[in-house]
Image (cartoon, rainbow, N blue to C red; front, side, top):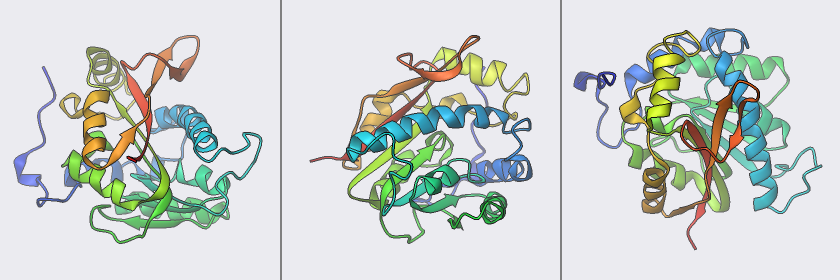
Length: 253
């Protein structure tokens, strides 16, 4: 049976994207977010795979030198659903003036503390990207977020509104397939690899659905790459989209 849908009583106001119960769930994980063996261990394994895709996308979009250490120098980056900063910090180290947004104030507090300890100047904000006024950014990322929001189109529209002309967006999300249901929910959550209640299979979206959401927001989706798992390779980029996938999006010409 599919997991129960979130209770109607916690539904946000029209146009808002945050689900209060989702923010509370991830906020409870804040203190353990940077522990590579804790409740966010899977994210620590996933992050290098996502970063590899992001770096290649940056170089391709801005025709950069893949050997350069700071390809985002002079650019602004926004990480939406930043958690405690696992992606925001590498973006800052790549040279970007980086901003992170998360629905959970606990995550933002943990992110600020970790960035300050590492000497990184990252601007963090708690709230709804649909209502925060932050300006526009050359790079906008939202990793494993769209499946958690209340209104997917409103969320994607808000991301598009934050993207500067000529900018690049990168999103990743689980695919709504039987494989994702079995591995991410029935296996990973039941075995404790991912905290229970993290995923709701009915909220997963297919690449075609995401393409439509982006198109309605005036964005063109690039060719998706799968994030697959195997016993020999662990998590890795793949042509197999059945578990999870990552994509770029740019403004439609």
